[in-house]
Length: 209
View 1 (spheres, one colour):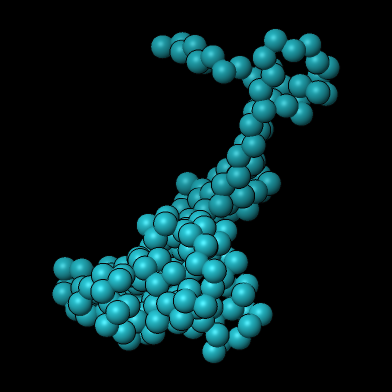
View 2 (cartoon, helix red, strand yellow):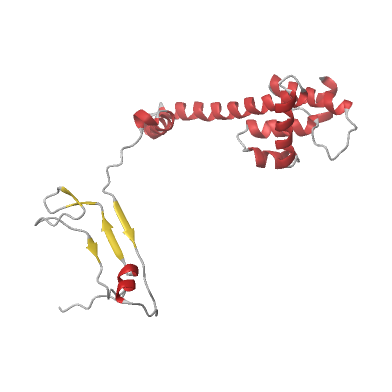
């Protein structure tokens, strides 16, 4: 690996799985016709895996490494076809490990922050995402559905006008006693569905005071 490290300028503290992937790419490159258009080279693999390990998505990581996203996807297909022990398979496995390490680091920081009472929201966010079946926030707000249609300068029939004028449908809304009523309930003290008149206007309603 010393020749590889010199050629690709491997920085200190590079994980062994990344070094192994670079070594596999170097062996493949040595046996190939070394066409410069083919980016399956140790220097490119090193930059790619380092970027993914830092938390970048695949496409921008490819841009950093100087390889097209299309070529990267092709490497993944070759790995699936040839198996995990091949150079492409070793690199593909390293991609998954690098991505997992980035996620692990982020989760570790979130968990560490949540130990400080000032940042309790970090812990709450973690459990909401990790265990949504137990920690998902309930939807307590009343449901309001609004459908709006406006005709401007269009000659239509009364029936067509009623179909396109602004309409508000209220699924649930508290009445004056604080009780939630269902839409369509016309019991005194409740608020029924509100439908604008067929001659509804967007102009302000004149005041009589």
